[in-house]
Length: 98
Image 1 (cartoon, rainbow, N blue to C red):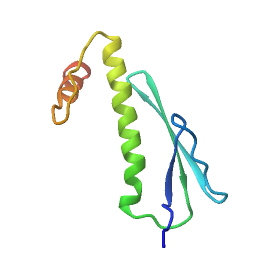
Image 2: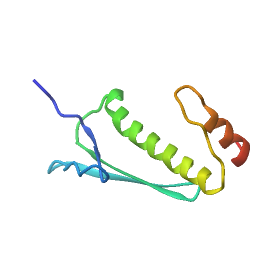
Image 3: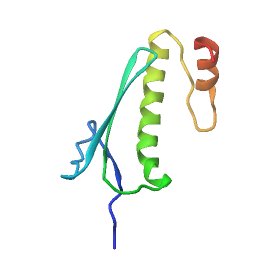
């Protein structure tokens, strides 16, 4: 039997995922180097496992990286991006302080 996750990411980019009737909507509005980052999740009134927050954490992480990369492009910094590189984190520490 499939049980729905107690935490659901509400996508506003690739089409909206509708929350359930009893879900509470939690909004995250962040300023990342002057770029707005927005995420909404629907939370059911039931216990969640640590694994249940992974999808929301991955989406939030991706949006933070996107905003950071956009900001770096805005100020003329190009970051070669590939798996395992970590150049973006090194540049962030160098240009924006750690």
